[in-house]
Image 1 (cartoon, helix red, strand yellow):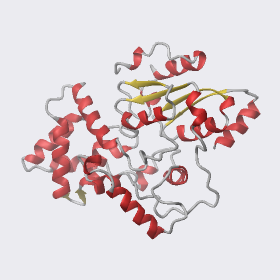
Image 2: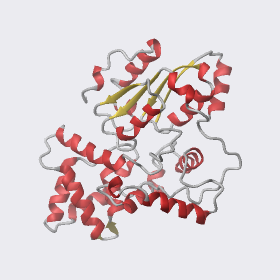
Image 3: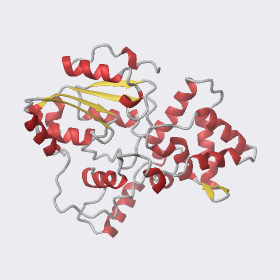
Image 4: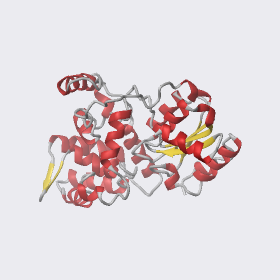
Length: 321
């Protein structure tokens, strides 16, 4: 991807470019900037991932469970929500983990609960805290109907029907990119049995509360952490970012939506390890990605940064619309 972008730059005749990307886009963006720093004027990374992700932050979804809890609490504080929504989530997780709720042609277990809370984790949306509180209260009283009704409204993503409604999104391409670009606990040359063994050891090494309030098993099944176990070893492997050294000095701005549950702020802040001099803008009320949710704010901050290499007035990002 980086080499393709470089070919486009040459064809257009630009000496330097401003590069804006979101979600997985910052991975090839970092790949380009590391290889061709002399042709980068400025970078903007929105809800981005760390390309040299040796901590497995995205592969394991590290920080996302904590992010889900923080976001539900934040949404509750910004609405007429009455009750402890994080306590409600802890109760629901423990309840369906021990005793899955069964309805007609549907079962809500821990994996499905996570899906319901985050709407599949795809667009950074969350089930409203009022709904979470209502479901928890009803279930405590022996009434599973509100939970089962929500499950019927939000089937587990990505099913064939749901993928077909996502326009140009390709789940297969998404997996191919992640399994090729992001580091794993195993070597690509390892046989599948060895990969599984190394994966199990790596998972067991995480502290018990890493995925709280969910179990490690429940979380990793939802997050598809095992999806690359059987992916073929690449015939030609090259790391997405051969070296992070050039990235440290490039003018960079990082956007993170404060209610983004797909790549929450708990994950985007890890980009500061590669871009220690970057400007970090936490965008209130923005889910995934920030620019898609705050067109009134993010584009003008990015444009000002590209023009001047300073963020300028970022006050619009401090309050949700």
